[in-house]
Picture 1 (cartoon, helix red, strand yellow):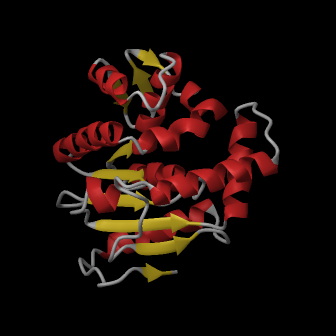
Picture 2: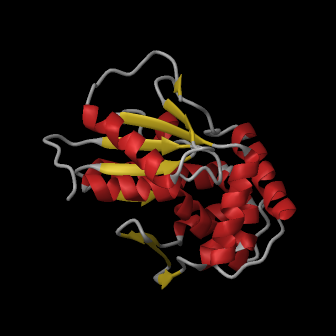
Length: 235
């Protein structure tokens, strides 16, 4: 049974690619009876749209025009609809993964997605949201802020396993290279880079199981301390 809270709560979960944010956030939302939003899926959907339109990422004027004509909906935080089409599986393809970080670094894309994410958060009774800039930009007023991380090797192993589950065969070297490139772009972009915000609880999930990470986050949330430290706390 979901936990019951007497007040509206916002949970922000940030971290790099392959750290397990989405699976953990989805389960936390289920256990708490909250709405869930996978913001990374939104950027993936836009990336897919630009790939289909064969748009050069340097063509900022055309990208802005396309954004204005793009319909994006997330059903129960799970299924992703692009212009009315269910693209939930297609946005996880390697071609999209390769370009999603460069696309997400485009200011017009970031501005549009952040505005949508803030709108969703504002109309949600309670919500769990994961991404790269949730605590730093989308929900700086989050009641609980977490930063999930893991070694590059472990993150690559998890991503390879995920891809294999989708029937995609990539070598561990290929997956590792993709992870490292996304880390570089996400951390170096000028607009909303991946950062650990002050007060965030940092959790290295390398040696933890999925259930252990979920339990840890739930323990923190259930405690409802309401006291955030001045600097990030590591576990």
